[in-house]
Length: 574
Image 1 (cartoon, helix red, strand yellow):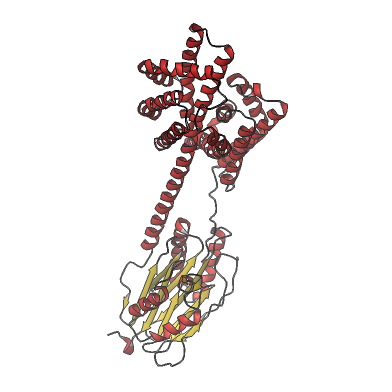
Image 2 (cartoon, rainbow, N blue to C red):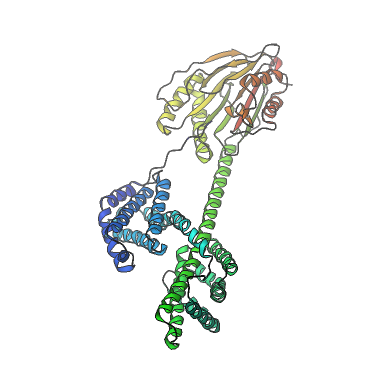
């Protein structure tokens, strides 16, 4: 059965009210943020009026997306990705460093949080709601930052490939000499420079233990790379440095260190380098001021390239980590869904004195919503149920548990399978989402007489095989709609009498949807022939043979469930 989207759980009503509050005060929050930007970073000093209006619009859209996440809106993932791309495009287009934009984004969310704390009646929020909001603060920033960095770094990659981390032209010879002198000074003072850098990072705000550990392990290597490039600015040393820098980016992502932290750490190295260059220029006056500025600019470029090389590798690794986490979560959900569905299968052995029962349940890779049940009623009749719910994974497993409970709990009160389905349909229509539905086949079998009363709700037809018949199996057709789609449905019961060794075969659509390449393994007519061919076998063997025939060397794209009932001769089985 084709999967259907599950309904989104409604958020806490208190969170919905908070969302309305944020939407109503978005303009005021953005105005506060603009004042914070002007006092905290140089972003606005570099922008004209048109650019200010554009980033103001980005801020409004960010609040809107934050509100979507608060409301658990299903369009959040798409919207936040597109918004992150817009932030990245603006950063690249305006030739401002990426840090200005990530910092602006961080300050926006911080201002939003402070505004809520100051002006919103927090007593209306439960502790769980406050915790949820707190998690959103970093989550939304992270969700925007990944596409932001991706777009920005993609547009910078061409420039990086052209420079190759070298100090080639148009740097003048005096400028290069100044940088070589800087290299010699730093090499001589390496034992002082590295600890000073680490301490500067440690004293800065929001430095994590992971960042300190990574810097202690890799900081010396970064400094050595810089010294190597200052001494020998060739394409070969540039390529080797780029490879190492990217490896550091991978390490930072694996260690849980954010790109912002790595960028901030490199920023702390700049004042140390500027001071050393200035000391050379100040006490050795044979350099022209223009050469001094030229050397500083090239050194600044090198550090930018370092941070961008780390950023590219970090982003790729982060995307891999996110993908691996998503796949692990998906595998866990499928495993849990399988455990739930297995727990819903009949627990006792399917054996009765007057008939044989064979059944199999083969979940697909994605775990659908197949189910079956066989149980004895108080009057001695046997109830057979088989069905398929819409959806995949956990949602389908939970829906199966509800469907089986409703059908099994109401079965003793309805001698008519059609009546049972009509009652269940009303409950499903009320309690299930509009996109969810159930196909099912129910049969009530009386062992003493061989009478089988059945009804089908949108399910695949079953088959009746007469043991002595030479013709094909007789289809037991479906006459009604699936359950849960309409508030009221019309279904009818049908009756057949089973003679000794007659077989009833039921299945879900996964059995006839098995594919070999682009072709269906068999058509319905082929399944009918198989049922007729194996009708003389014991019911468990018959079911297994049919399923094996249908699935050998082919791929099952959906769950497969099959069920066979065979009446024994003389009222008792051998």
